[in-house]
Length: 81
Image 1 (cartoon, rainbow, N blue to C red):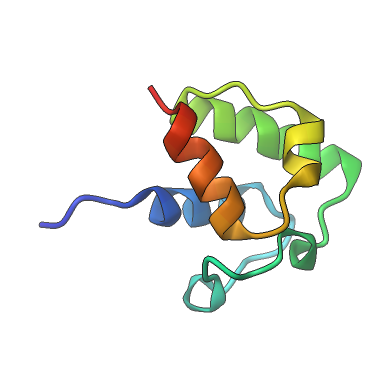
Image 2: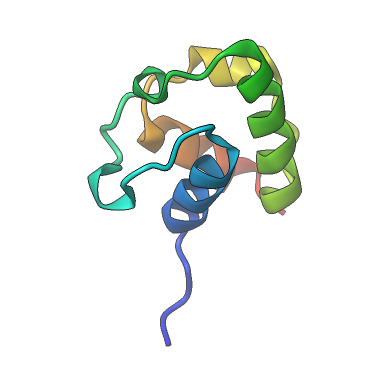
């Protein structure tokens, strides 16, 4: 059994937080975060879910300044407990 990667966990959290289901097979490190169509309410839920899953503190500005799934994955990897 292989360990779940940060990106795998991130895709799961994104999928759970979005009002629509994501096709996880299409989410890559270069996928633009703005392609998920996140509004302000979803953003709040997403930040909470990411903080709970990874134990990192994440400000809305941090997330809004990231362009790709890879950027968010790297941010989490650098700050995860």
